[in-house]
Image (cartoon, rainbow, N blue to C red):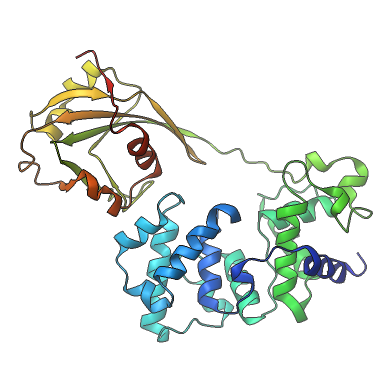
Length: 355
């Protein structure tokens, strides 16, 4: 398409959003924003970005922070491996590069949690290196504008879109060009109800002219959703409660939660209290006072059904393999959003059981 990059750039300079990571060439800030915005909308990610910059203004500050502190600040963003990778990479940059973010695409690409897209974004935004970015927004915009029906989640599709993005790239202004491509997909060529009349490419857009906007882009793989049942035991006395950190490689690794019994279906109360895991966790002590209604919590790849069981114990000193904290101090521990929301809404009014 003739003058593609100029048309795109002119539109972006006039209509692009003002975002803090776009007004800087600081590679640390740009890297931080890109990791936060993986799997996260700008509106949701912006306050987290500002919070991290406030707490960790330099990469050395992030490297020296505790993982618990980082996970606490990340709480609610999901995909917590991003936060752990962020911490590991900050430590690596401080240890191996004296705290100076490397200006090499090849080195950036080797950092934890940094793939083709993120490394190209950092390289072009911070250092002006001529690498094209292809994220979900770019896939959608290019597939519609150029009428490409090759599945974006296929090997052939990834190669085809990468080649097209490379061909269209304005190598003299790679950072601005890439930001404009992403912005076009984010605010104009949206997944649902795209604003085609505000698009500078509408006259040449193949999908628009063929009436195939809703059919593109094409995806072949359907996400398999796993269903899980979580039974949380809130073992407590009048002031304190038992918590533990999730250590195995699973969702929420490194976050704190209440002792958990996971089941293959929604357990009746009688089934739960007779489960050998319940007896082992509670040490045969305590009185089951109440339980919550079932709470549904959706992740991109998992459907979670949770219940919270309140178990009153006079003395928590025997629960040595767990951490005993005051209820008021729970805010200082990074916890899954499922638990945070439950505590905010239901902690003072649990639902009574039949027992």
